[in-house]
Length: 279
Image (tube, rainbow, N blue to C red; front, side, top):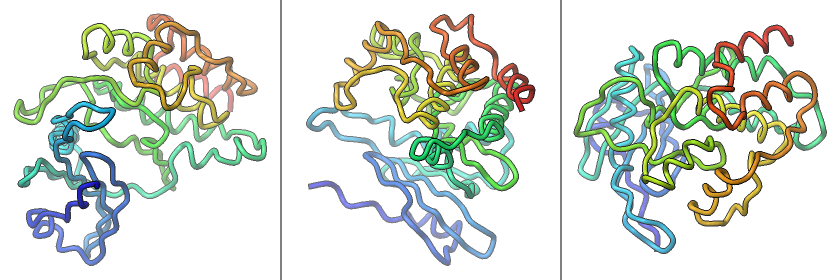
């Protein structure tokens, strides 16, 4: 039987005095809530350690992820962000970002063959380039982390970002990200050492993989979705990525972004420039 979903702790309730609350995401070791009050909407994240179970190892770091993200956002100067500890782990409060994510907004491309909108790809690339320009790597680029808002695209979920110090008590080693968007060098390092270092070049690869799966519906490398993570990572190390069947200039750009050699990939700022020219 799965554990009951934790309620928002008193420290969060006291900080926000919610008028409404809605559970948005529940996965092992974390929940995300949409909370509204008289001051607007907020995203609230709770984290707690994952116990070992069938098919997975214990993951104590999930308890620290919300506070680590809060510390990263604080260092980046984000407004209306607070974070702290509760009885089972850590939490953070940050502004709610309204809009569909990249995978959802390109759903028509996968279902009825509609053309992708280069402006959406450009918005994602700009959000990533802005983070890179400040000396940070995101570490967990995926379609769900690009929120296509009415005025701009937001890059969310910075718990794994690297680029400056965070409080030691909330820090933890980088053990890779969602494998469907992992660059070959990250997969290789995780297989060989158990950890890796987020890089901007790996972010660019992941953005290419995110654009590809959102437009075409395919993971960047062919492997069974239910295979063990180590087997999936080995496929990323050993096999070339799938043929990029996205038409036009965007397809060629994704191909460049997903070069196996990190030194051959464009920078996020270069991706922005090419997309502007393509428009």
